[in-house]
Length: 193
Image (cartoon, rainbow, N blue to C red; front, side, top):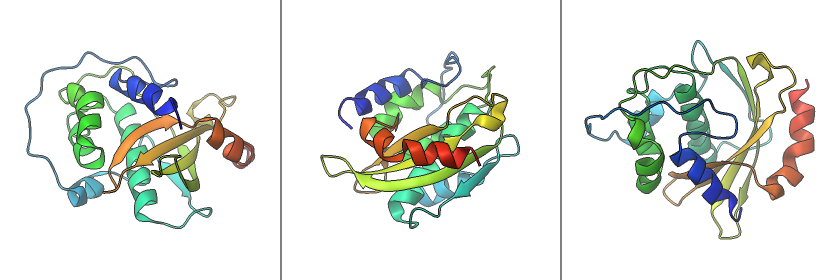
């Protein structure tokens, strides 16, 4: 997991990942009362939205607190990327992520109401596994098939979510070489079905 967490954190602070559209100009926002974890979980549409429905394959993992936290993080990210008005979405991140990560990666965009390049389409997501970093933090890796977004040549993405002790997400990053080595073949094979 080495430097990948820092790279992903830098990408998220910049408001992008290797596959995201350009970042909109943030607008100032009021500071609402933070929601509870239960409220955040209830707000996140685990099966996606009308424009970005998500089909889950959870056969490779047991549903655990960590897997559930990572699923909410993945859905939150795609929910945001697919919307033009981020004001109801960004505050949810405060209950899902560590506060320092929320402040850097989401809070600056809490007032965005005019994102002009949303990315939508059906997603198929397979939970690949729950592992640990060398520091002992749990990580959950997903194989995300975006091929139905109009580019049939799109390679499935391995996405990893770092979980902290209170089931808050510490970061999101594209899987490192260990996860690539462990899951890439299975992910690619699954996505071709």
